[in-house]
Amino acid sequence: MSEWLVLAIVMAAACAVVLVVTLLSQRTRVATEADLEEREAPETPDVLEYMVMMVGVVYAIVLGLAIAGVWEARGAAQDAVRTEAQALHEVTQRAQVYPADFREQLRADIDVYVSEVVETEWPRMVDHKELSPRGTELLAAVRTGVAEREPKNELEAQAYQPMLDQVAAAEDARNARASGAEETLPGIVWFGLISGAAVTIGLIFTMQIGRSFRELLLAGLFSALIAFLLFLVWDFDAPFGRSGSESADAFRQLFPNAAGRS
Image (tube, rainbow, N blue to C red):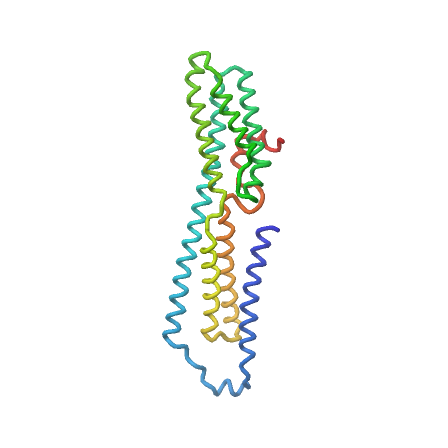
């Protein structure tokens, strides 16, 4: 199911629930139109308005911190992907000083690894929060191929250590990618966010919402906003996305020929 469709359903459901509850609560007040005009509406106590305001402010702060946390985690995950792809690309560029047979073999090994990452490892990482053992083996093969190639001249000797450093950087970035595959927010935080949303939306019913179009519109928009922000936190809570492998675009850009290989 598309994330946009999920968002539309969640926001529509939140609006529908609030509007239905509001209308049902209004129907429980059995009174004629004349009685409503004669009767003075009870005023909302000042302390209740203050409590509603404070709960809203506190929840807004907690929700803002949650959004900032998942956004930072997603940014760190994307940085790790770019670092890994760039390091492997740098290895292929520094191998220009080596003989053609070694360059071709090295690029073939890296292409196979990139293909494994994009086509097989990424869906597994998104769905199961773990990397594939084969990807680890393929990257180890790249390191072995670089480390075991003894430099034959001065140019190769100058490129040898930087190539090893770039492979090590790719391995470090891969490890960071493995650590970032897990969801950012623990269950207790989600419990607080959902409970806080229910309390915050529930408190608007204490403010004597009427049946006027303006009041119903504001109640619906407020509930839709809360639903949207919770969806935003949920979507960003997966650093590498909830569906597809768009977050692997750094590999596709630097290794366009490797994408789609098995």
